[in-house]
Length: 117
Image (cartoon, rainbow, N blue to C red):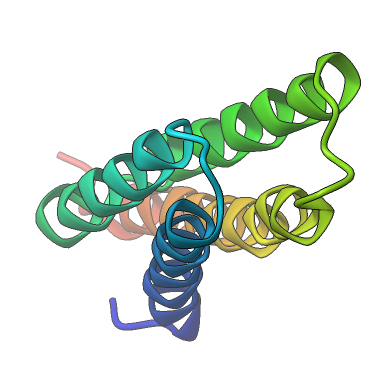
C-alpha cells in the first residue's frame, strides 16, 4: 500500500525534525533535542513497521506535550516553534487515522472474500 498518507507522514515527521533542529540552533533550550530524536525514531519506525496507530499516539503525545509546555513555560520568545510543534502533528494524526481505517477496511474485505470451508 503506497498511499499519499504514507508520504505525508514522512514529510511531516521530517518537518518536525527540522523545526526542532532549527529551534536548537536559535535558542538555548535543550528540549528540542528530544523532538529531533523522537521524529527520527518515528521515521525509522514508520519505514520498518508502518503502524498507523503508533503514529496517531505519537501525534497526540506531541501535541499534548507542547500544549503543556505552552501553559507551564514562558514561550513568547520562541512561540513560532511551539506553534509548529502543535500544528504539524495534526496532519500526522490524520494520516495515521486514515491509514488505520484503510487497513481495517482491507482486512474486513479480505475476510468477507475468503472461501468458506
